[in-house]
Length: 274
Length: 219
Image 1 (tube, rainbow over the protein chains, first blue to last red):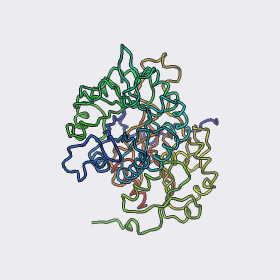
Image 2: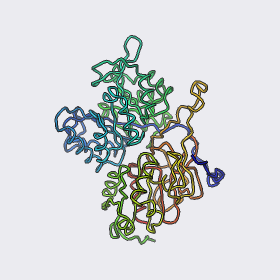
Image 3: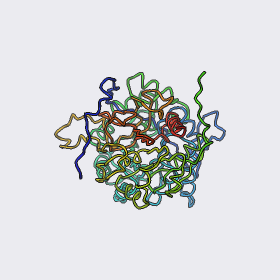
Image 4: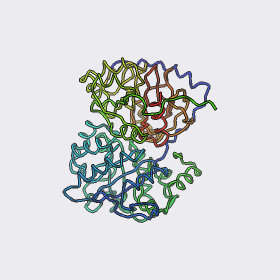
C-alpha cells in the first residue's frame, strides 16, 4: 500500500458554512412485494391500479410516494422462474428510480449475474447461503459487498433464536447471532432479519433481537416482520436500532400510507428522507 | 424574462455509457431513457471519443475494475476526453489519484486519494462497547448533499437527498462541488474542467437524481 497523500487541511470550504452535523443515519422504509410467476401475490387495495397484480405498477406507486427502496421476493417454483424473474427485473429497472433488491431461490453466481445485469441493485440470498456459506464469499468477490444482502429467518425457541429455512418452515442448527456474524465476516453488505414469531402478527418488530444484531454487527440491519402501525416502525429504529424497516401488507392494503408514516417519524425525531 | 438558451435535450450528439464489465449500467441507460433520451453502451475508444457526453459507471471492487479498464486501453482514453464526462460511484473513485481499496492507482483526474471509512471495530469491539454504532460500513442510505457549487446542481436545493452505497470515500478538496457527512464530511461530487464525478447514484436517487443527470446532459 502506498501512503495516503491527502491534505486534510483543504477542508477550507467548510469552515464558514454550517454542516448539518447529524450523526444519525437516514432510516429507510422498504415495501416488500411477493412475486409469483411475475405477478404480485398477496393483492392490494390500491384503487387506482390499472392491473392490481402488476409488480411494476405497484413499484412505481411506492417510489413516487416516498419508499426508499423496494424488495421483490420471488416465490415461484416453476421451470421458467428464472426467465420470468429476470424479465420482471428488467421492467422494474426501466420504470423505477429508486434502488431495489431481488430475492427468492437465488443459489449461484450465474443467478446473481443475470439479475444485476438486468438492473437489480442488490440480491438477497437466504437458504442457499445457509446450505453453502462460501456462496457469500464468491458473490462478494465477484459483485462487491454492497449488492449482497443475506436474509435470515429466525424463530425464538427455548430461549434461543434459531435460524429457519424454506420461509421459516425448517429449523436449522444455527443460532441467529452466530450466523449473522459469520455472514458479516464473509463480506455481506446487509442483513435482512425476519422474526418468524413476529411476522404477520402486526404486533411490532423483534426489537430486542434487532438491537443485539445492530450492536454486535457493523453492517446495516433491515428489520422485517410485525409492522402494524407507525409506532412499530419508530420502535424498530429506536429500540431495535434498525437501519431500515421492511413491511408488506400494511403498505399494500393502504393501512399505513408511506408519506404519512415518514411525516410522523420525522415529527418524532427519526431522520427520514421526505 | 431571461431564458437560458440551452439546446433541447437529444438534439445533440451521442450519449455513451462506458461498458467495461463493471457495474449496473442498465440502470443508467434506463434513467436516461426516462429523460426521453437514448444512450449507447460502448467500450470502443473511437465511439467514446466521438460522444457528446460520456458516462463512466462503476460498481464493485476498485482494483478489478481498474484492471478491466486497462485491458481495454480505456485508462488512456478517459483522461484525454474533451467532452463532459461523468463518473458515478466507483467510476468517480477511479478518476481520483489512488484508492486504498485493492491498493489501486487511479486515473489521476481528481487530485485526491480514496480511503476507507473509519471502522469503529478497529481496536476491538469489546474495548469500546459504547462506540457509536450508527456509522456502519458500507454506508447504505439516502444522505443529503450540501455546499453545492456547480451547474451540475442547477435546480437542486441544499440538503436534498441522494442514494449512497459505498465503503470508501474521498475527502473534501478544492475540487469538491458537493459535500456529504457520514461521521465525517466527505466529497459527494467533484468537478475539474470537463470532468465530473458523483459518489452517489443519480440514476437511483429519485427526482433529485434525475435533475442532476439532466443537468449533466445539458452541460
